[in-house]
Image (cartoon, rainbow, N blue to C red; front, side, top):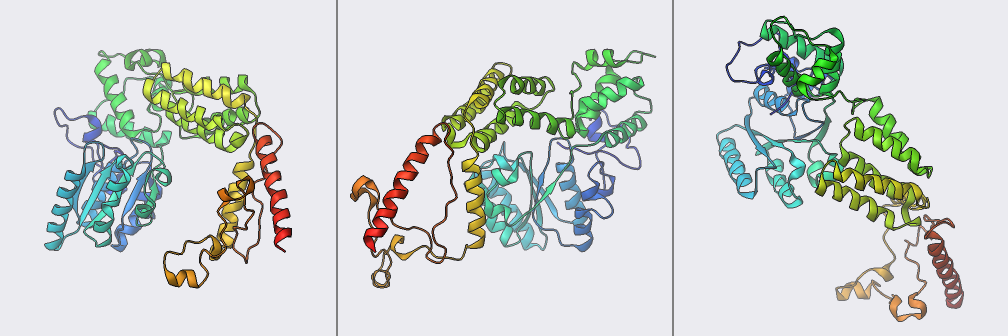
Length: 439
């Protein structure tokens, strides 16, 4: 369950219900910490006001209001509400939900289908949403903690708008504590420093701050007030050294990345250890190591990507703390590997060229000719099969004729790319010779 909790009137106590659930907001403008979406001029507020609610993807960390906001949207637009989780649902569950939505639509009412952890669905399952989105059977609202660009189908993303949910700032978390105190009718038994520590423990998670507050109230004796040290003993949780959504997080990952790029394994290990100690998600660190392998090492050491990816998988398999050693080993490997950003810059240059010349057709001699008409119009004509040529190299030109040859990839004389450069120079020489012979 999610997420943001604030309301103008404190709810009546409900036996057995967690505090976070009791303080769940009842209107969009009750939501705390996502004013860019739910405030007076927020994106979602404007959508509701206009009556034009399209499919959406909510992207953000846990405890930031994704589920709650989806429920409120359904209520404020009079849509039927269906909720499923990609963790517990399969194809059969999706079919049932779609059929219920079609029945509801036949009765004149649309359905808001909320899909929690939507990135957990495979590509085929994600594709199954497309027909019901296109014909208006459902307004899809998916929630994910992962980057949608990497985890969701392009076809699905093209039909939905991605909205970012931010980790809650300290003042938003403080508002939730004040609401909790009002609902409980008593102050939280913490001194000023301990209260600040509790906010840091929540780490931007609205649900977490209320759960922690409940733990404190349960543990406190009559008249007892906890200081920061006693608080950590009571809740058995330490405050993070930095907020994973704020500057400290980005400063340390930047320091780690630059230490690896600068071939300093000792500094890289130091920053890696600080991130572990602060409670950073190790799989996030693993993803960043993979990025370093492809951005800063590339083909200078082709094994770097394999090592980084294997370390990420090893952590996923072993868990903490054993898996942390695999990430540390990968960190050392990357820091001590030869460095090259040639593949990275080549890809950026190729992308720029693709945008500039995206309408040009490839030369006809490298296109297949499955029909007689295509053969007669020159498709596939004059193509030379490289494996039949000396050195398995024909030297043909593969760029569109109107574009001419371009050079994007320029490997340096470092690491394995030294060997790649030798091959490219050799093929360039053969290409010139064979082009001259053809003339």
